[in-house]
Amino acid sequence: MGATGLSDLPLEPAPPEEPPEPGVVVLGRFQPVHKGHALMIQAADVWRTENASGEGLIIAIGSSNQPPSIRNPWSSEERSAMLRAWLDSSGIEATIVAIPDIEDPPKWVAHAEKYHGSAGSIFTTDVGTAELYESSGWPVIMGELEHRDSYEGWRVRATAQMLSTVYDEDAVRSVMVASVPDEVVSHMLEEGSLGRLAFMGEGGEPVG
Image (tube, rainbow, N blue to C red; front, side, top):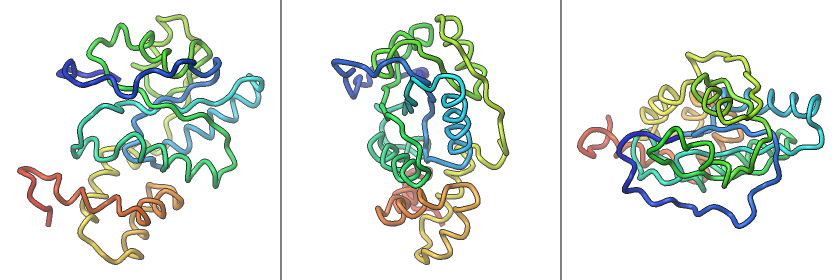
């Protein structure tokens, strides 16, 4: 979602001419897709199947307009490909949309609806997200946080950065699969998605 200092960022991508039909929305940054995300998406799909089987699952990737940084190493297109690699292996059907950040949290939901469609319902484990959507009239389903300490995005990125100069793929895989689905690790290794993290330390110097 939006954060401070984003007013100069372009709204990319532009909203689709026709957003998806109302569905069950899962919102995240997915930097990268980790096992916490996988658990949340699986839980959302189970809830959808049991309670809203006529609606689709919509995965919304936030921060699509953020410039590359250690907090945002991968583009929305790359994150979409990570998601697709995992979804295909899991047999879960979903529509994936990318949403740019804005600098106005009270207007976030109206902004996001242009991309992921109108209510719907949202499945989330984040209290702030739940409050924003609930105040905009969305039904909110709160999922349970599982293994939060292990699956926090910053921890996963820190591990990936430490491995970014390791060229033994088996060694990288053995560490990464503790927090990232195997299909996503395979995709990242095939695409060479980890090496850039070596140059995202302070001052642009490679990490040790």
